[in-house]
Length: 102
Image 1 (spheres, helix red, strand yellow):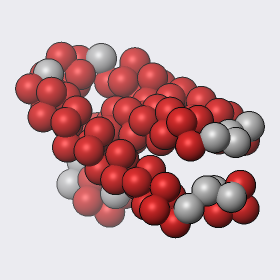
Image 2: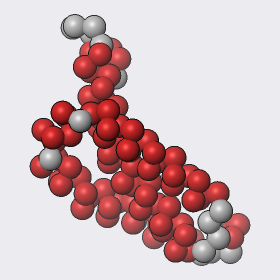
Image 3: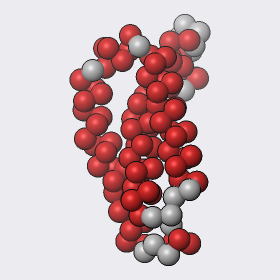
Image 4: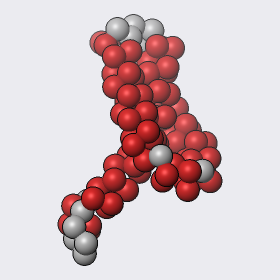
């Protein structure tokens, strides 16, 4: 972003958006946790697709709002996929060894 002549303040605010999205979305996902556990693969694929999509947007980002949009999508993917990865690994690890694989 700095190389695109955006200020350090603008760069910092993009990371603030990441934190705000996570704080706002995580309680909703926690409330729906039992449904998401039943649809673990869908949650994982959706989250990873959002993460990948954010990086595709980031490649062509030139304006502040494009960086903000990419960060919002990345944050949604992060709160969707990362908890699902830990659950997925725990489910398929050998009995008594799930902690070793995380």
